[in-house]
Image (cartoon, rainbow, N blue to C red; front, side):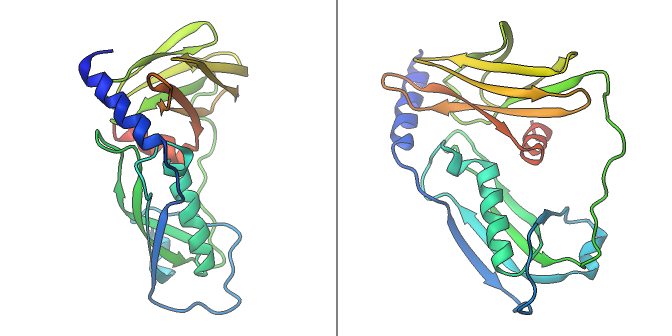
Length: 233
């Protein structure tokens, strides 16, 4: 490992020693009726016309307390927390108005979101058909965090991705089935994914703690988090 990679490793190990739930602050502009309960929260685009007929309830800000690469700092965890608090506020939709991404200095996400109460009749528009029925796409990506630490990622026995900062790659799979994705640092880490043709899958490659040096970390993330990451790279 080069000198930059060594210091990156020290920073990662220190940051990974502490994990805590994200800090959440909210501000309500209206008080919803007592029967305004939600069992699902949508993530809506700011340009969606449905917002014109919706009630703005308030805002939520979510910021991880520490520079952690654990799941508590992941985008999916932040979204899960935002949805949970939106439900408590009586909302059934959030619109992300500010998103701070991981960078060289930190591995965490933070967001600010508006909370809305959508009309009861709202149904999201679903895409018809499959984009690529002949194959499945597995996307591998890495945020800018820890640029000095790189490693190889394998799909079965095949090397498919070199995990380095702020990169992505698409791997097309022609046969449906269960596949093992793995990488090796001080120890071998792996995840299994069940693949169906016509679908996209997103795997975040990251850095975890190790005794002498950082280890690889692999996460299968939601479509929303994966598309958001890949679209900005």
